Amino acid sequence: MTPLVLLLILVGALAHATWNLVVKRSAVSGPTFVWLTAVGAAIVLAPVGIVVAVLDPPTWSDLALASVVSAVLHVGYFLSLQAGYRAGDVGVVYPLARGTGPLLSVVFAIVLLGERPGPLGLLGAAAVVAGVVIIGLGGGRANWRSARAGVVWGLTIGVIIAAYTLWDAHAVTALALSPILLNAGTSTLEAVLMTPLAIRRWAAVRSVFRGHWRDVLVVAVLSPLSYILILFAMQLAPVSIVAPAREISVVFVALAGWLLFKEPHPAPRLTGAVVVVGGVALLAASR
Image (cartoon, rainbow, N blue to C red; front, top):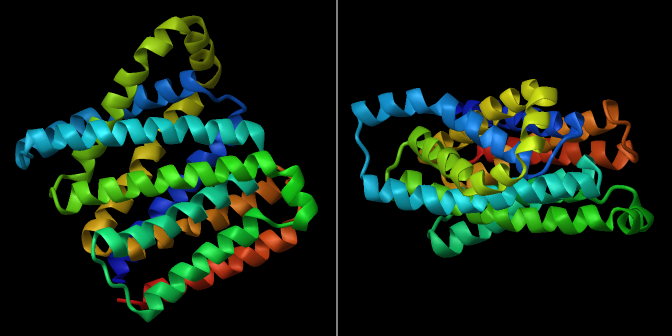
């Protein structure tokens, strides 16, 4: 992994962890918040996307198809994520989702994309997945029982993460689409897909925006930024390396869940965080 790829992953992971913590802290979620952030992201990305399209015109049919599929998957991800945060601790839902996602991404990148990561890469990926599982299941069987809803949501979200990771990686590599244009198209279509629902809940939309416009703005900027950086990294390194490496964000979220939200079982979660960091170090040392 080159220093540039590692930098893209680290900055993207920090941005990703930050907006997830904003969502948890804001205590507002659901379709109205998702729609507002999608609209905000589309507005933020529009001028940049226009410049990119003028300088390097894409194959518009490929961009349209990639954006439609990606938008459907991402809407499912955002709605499931916020439902998971309502049902369980962020320190359970987030690590399990971020662990299941890269595990499946690595498996399918090898099976479907023909990637062949080296021994260090495979060991690092395994360590990252093991670390996030330790974090997510910290507290033993009693915690597993009390966190069952969060565990189920975390695993479900992980499957969706694997699906959109592989699809978007295909879009920016095999189809050679710009990560910026892909995200601009995806955010716009996310907003379009959810507009009928937003119209039916317009009073709630106005209320959420009035009370949480700062949170909407932060998520609208950091969510696409974090993913654009990861997609650029995927253009420079295999999915089987980038997908697990980006889960360094789990460390940031686990620490914040303990320090900011006073979530229980800090010892196993900190142990898992150390394992994740070790796995990312192995990934960084791999080719």
